[in-house]
Length: 532
Picture 1 (spheres, rainbow, N blue to C red):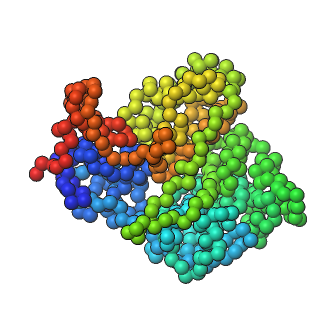
Picture 2 (picture 1 turned 45 degrees about the vertical axis):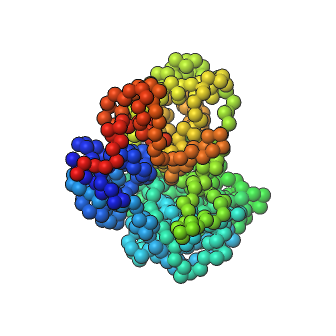
């Protein structure tokens, strides 16, 4: 039985029990989400003792060296002394080396980290200014030997961060970054594959980085880059793209203007429309999409219809936030910024689609598909942890009724809507895509026509913006914000089982329960001091 010290108190881990499970048994409140090492929400710092290697899987080398680990996957092998994460460890200081306006709307920043920072162009970082306001920016340009990072910032109307970068930030100022994250980067190995890149606004930055990395790696297939803007003023880096085209015959760049005034040398129309008019067959192509979220979603759907394989499709929608600067806590610590997506409204139900419902056998085939799909989900190491404690049959029933209502218009679903049901789950774009690809493959396996599959995918895409997030947000019930984590006590009105030791708990017994998970713990497991 390994012992753990956390915030000056001693706790004991049972055999084959993770640190997170032990904390929940003792009623210790710490952040968590997936409970299987996928989201990194629960990360803590070990200051004495060695965490097992599996508990540090996926963390960047610097964090592993400092003792960071994931308590949800950590079964202690020795005594451990644990602390909450240190903000200074997670965020790396950077200096603004250079600030350049590439166009009236686009600003380039060159940032110098104080330590080595490994990344691939197209990944993104969290950039934090001194008052704590944080935004995500994609990394542009090649990973340089001098370790300088490059980001492109688009001025957004009423954008707190972008306006500050344009109007206040000076060369020599210090900021902080965290990351890198994301998978929208060049995939090595397919050296002769056609590459199609489509971007709007500052989405050109990461796309240019991907192009430069592909060319530096010796990519031999044709590379087509389409960059679009409403007006000519939104275009930039055209000279750089021209030089790259002259130096590399397999690189082709097209600037697109969708407004009424199209300058010489530019294509008329939206970048995605121009690109798909010229590239009808994408079965062998690597596809990269960056920029406005509506463009990215529409282009992703169109690319799939033109044969692009999900594994070869990489998307990075730029979602802009408009909050005022983050307030400062009285003790001087910036109050944690709430995810901008938490303000999104739940999408209204779409118009019924009787054609899809008929193709699904009036529900018969749908039930078979969902049974097959959730069997795969419960076997998937990244998706299954989110459904711990929920029976597969219950999930099938909920999803069946939800889709039944969406496709027929009949009011048969009375469960929580997607935003509320997923409020505590830290779901990345990649994880949402993983689930979407699994469902699409399952639909194909059961013979649903491709046009109907794409319509169902479009239905799922409606809920992406209220499900994908980098941190949990509170559940709102009758206008009141409910706690994300923590414990309370209640008196059982019926008998039950302890979720920790499986012991019987009689009616009338007072138990501790987790406010989000609903898990309950018997008096024996409620002990808050470990045996010496």
